[in-house]
Length: 404
Image 1 (cartoon, helix red, strand yellow):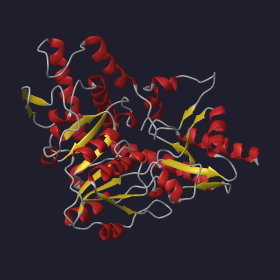
Image 2 (tube, one colour; image 1 turned 180 degrees about the vertical axis):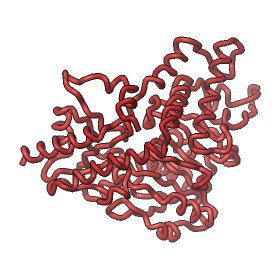
Image 3 (cartoon, helix red, strand yellow; image 1 turned 60 degrees about the vertical axis):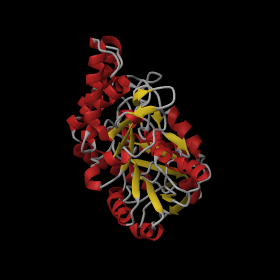
Image 4 (cartoon, one colour; image 1 turned 90 degrees about the horizontal axis):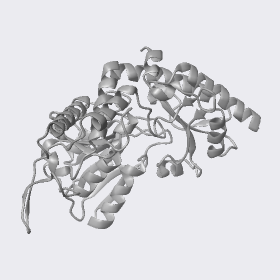
């Protein structure tokens, strides 16, 4: 990978902050955007603004074509069978909520989830449990954020309707054994929904190979725009979902007392869509595919190794998750002994290293680990350089030394 060429494609990386270089280490929250993505979005707004599927003029037809191309790109990126297995949402959060509130549940049904979930993968099930009388079962990860598939066998039974699980953790950096869990669930007659917001951007994800039923991901974490996400679902399952929202484009006919739903995907996409967002995400997928997801994964493994080993070399740092970088993605949540994580993040910010601190929308795992104030998290992406990671370690070590 030509890291200098890649970095030159990101306008923000050509800038300085307060007259000094900076290192952006918060990509697990949201990623930076390259010029091709910005250009694609700007082109929609400046060259052919229109509504897909509504008007017949040239701008509308161009919008419809580009919107359809973007859906096809998203489908191909996760190896879906057909473009109409991709539903546009505003985020992975909305995609998970769409399944939670649209899947037909009966009182007594059970949903199995875990203590490693992001709030977006947990709170919808709280709501469904309260509204529809379903029960929640939990599989607990170990202290390093790893699951034993055998424990899913114990929890998944004949009343289990669905397993909702995070694919890659935004705290422990571990990757769940999704293929094994999916087989266990299917053998018991249950469906599986994966929160893949932290996996799809970083390594190849193949829904056919995984056998997954539903999968949610967000554009803004994969160099795409904010406000756009995707729900992948097997076509026959999407057809059985009750639309969470109804309005324009979700029907083919209506009178004062009834309506006829459109086919998937339109029936699940009410109202004007985020055309610029979808087109921008399509451009982001082109960019990622042009580099190659296997290359991105391999390079991020190198970055992650430098990051993890650097943190482990400091006895005053407690690393969350596996100590073996081979078992991790390219992020690291940690705490410095005796220091508040927010203070650490602010001190790093003063040195132009941009990280995140707090609970990272993952309260249960932090409480499970006894971390009442959360943690500091440095999260990397393919546009980060090895030099940035090394400088981050050096500056963090200086901060900790000066504090003590």
